[in-house]
Image (cartoon, rainbow, N blue to C red):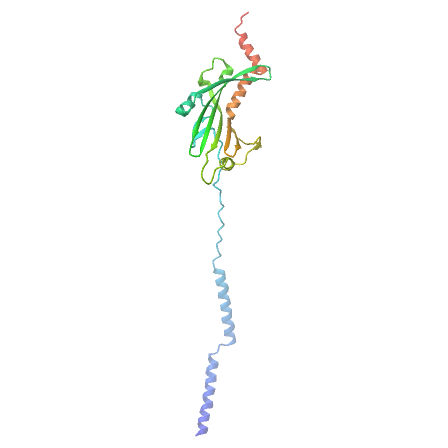
Length: 258
């Protein structure tokens, strides 16, 4: 009896061994599975979409330098522009202007002649919360160079501005003259073309501007019209150069009949 059970036990173990061997994958199967897995991995890598790299957009600076003023402006509104006639400017200023001063500037010319150049200016004061400003608007009579009959105010055209700004005492922080030059000129109009005599110089095809610190609380700005100055030089050359004088003589000779 005992021997029979022992034989059954041995046979059972043999069958279990054979059954387990039938379920183990063969070496070929393992190689095939490994190859298939490798091909699937490569296929997956090939079909994987390439990453998209977005180039950063260039950053364009919005900071732009201002153009030089073409005359005198108040609150960004032009009140007196270059070449405006004296009566037109006076009407724009209304009752803030004082009386007009007229005078003659004697100019010694290379040809030996003395030119009585007709000039005028308007002086007034403008008071704001932070500043006390004095303004001088300068005019020149170019037409008078061609004919002494052109003496009316309408012949005077604006060619210059002189502004002196005084900073009022304020609570902390106190504005200084160097702040005005730095923030209202250097940062708005850029690097000056030159620095001489304490003035920062700016120039374009219409305006020559100079600004300087007079002391800690005063700033002076001087501006001139490029076009009016050119017009003045042309008139002087037309009438008082050697060629101009010869031409004027010929005009006078037409009135003499021999």
